[in-house]
Image (cartoon, rainbow, N blue to C red; front, top):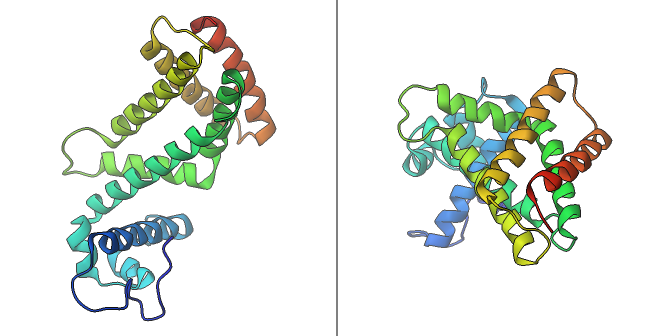
Length: 214
């Protein structure tokens, strides 16, 4: 999160902020909102409280995000991007199969975490709120995940560690198997990291036997 000076301003000078300063302020507001939702949930969230916590004015929030739905959608997009970057960075220097296993284990840890639960609630809130148009938040998150997995598998192909007859089908299977397992596992209680590692290893081995040819 971008630290604010004691005066509450993002820059010391007066006048119109630069594009970089405006972006930092937007990121700061989004990060503050995410922290508030983690600590207090949706019930206590309001732009008035957000403005106080972020040390900015309500008009500033409205000018950047429009309304609560617009703010939460921007927040979802930011967190989704951060999650994707973090996952893609894990296991980057490992052999392909090991990297897949590490990433799968981390995704499960993330899905069962407080932040993962909040992310899912945020998706549901946006899709259930009236007045939305265009693709659903759930659909956008799914498409983003598929694109990330497809890129991950393509890296294995480019390094000569695997070959896929249909990389799109493989990416869809990888994600849907993981989401299905997460739903089942959560219905039986939250698994620990060792459980997630164990399932990730089995999933990766079965996936590569079914879809990849070295």
